[in-house]
Length: 152
Image (cartoon, one colour):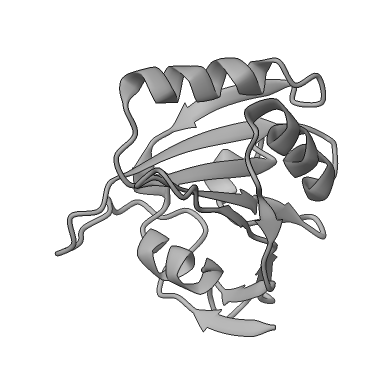
C-alpha cells in the first residue's frame, strides 16, 4: 500500500491552483453498491475498462487515521481524457467530509467535450444501482494532482 501525506483536511476550502494546464471535471455518485460492482456496470454500460489500482493511504491530518482510497482507472486509447473512480467512504470515514452524501467520485482529467460529458451523465443514469449523480465543484479536491499521480 502506498502512503501519501497531503496537506489538506477532508474539507478543503481552497480552489485548485496549479502551474499545469490540466482540466478536471468531477461527478459524485450515490450508491450503496460496492465499488467493484459499480465499475462493472459502468464498464458494461459505457464500454469502459475501469481497472482496480493499488490502494492509496492518505493522512488527512495528525489526529485521524489514514483514509484508504481504492482507485480504479481507465485511460482510453483514442481520447485525451483519463477517468478515475474513487471512493468517498471507507470504514465510516469520509475522504471529502463536506460531501458526506456522496459515496463515489468519477474524476475526468483532460478535455472532454460537452456532448461527451452529457453522454457520460446520461449513460450513468441508466445504471440501476446508482441512485443519484451530481457534478461536484473541483474546489473540494485541492490535492487532486497528487491523488491522480498516485492512482496511475
